Length: 150
Image (cartoon, rainbow, N blue to C red; front, side, top):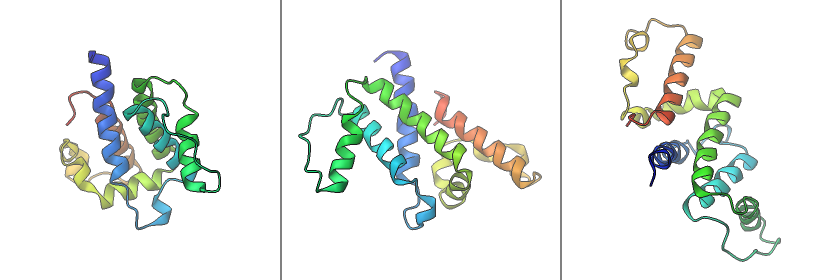
């Protein structure tokens, strides 16, 4: 695996952890169905490669929608799918910031492997909500992007 592919794989693993840990109890905190299907298709392309399963009956709506999301990606390279998966997660949090903020508040353990607590303004509680959100979101993006973040 090249260093670029390794870097993208590390980002993908972090993004998968975030998506997996999204709260499922609250419907308002879940991505909309089309975003879920995008994540599903990209995940399958990234981990399995091009769609290799037979087309299900369109009467099985969920199975058909999932198959279609994966099948539409055609011969996309798995490394490209991993990169798009990460980008889709960042875009989701940019479009619907309340999901990210509530996710951060309800699932702080996801950030325990990084140095979120080392941001001085957060450690001392001396920032307003908007500035705090921008700092945390910026750090989150670095967590997904920076190869040494763990």
